[in-house]
Length: 94
Image (cartoon, rainbow, N blue to C red; front, side):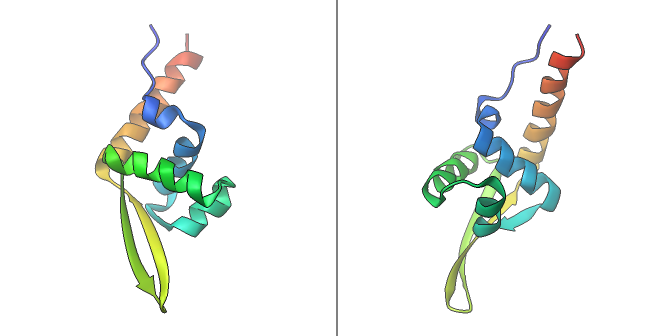
């Protein structure tokens, strides 16, 4: 039987952002934007969806008088990502 895929992580951009954050634990918004090729507006909306469910934390601050947005994966996000990967693997091991 196939495992249910988390609909929050199943969206391509959210999955891409989570994949990056799993690897680096914390990243600037601009780094995620560059790596995913997303527009700033779309990425902002998708990151906020991840924040709403508790998969990431978003911190806004100033660095050298410029705004900086940091995204950090939470423990809940790591567990959700691992569960998603395991569920996805169940589709290839039938």
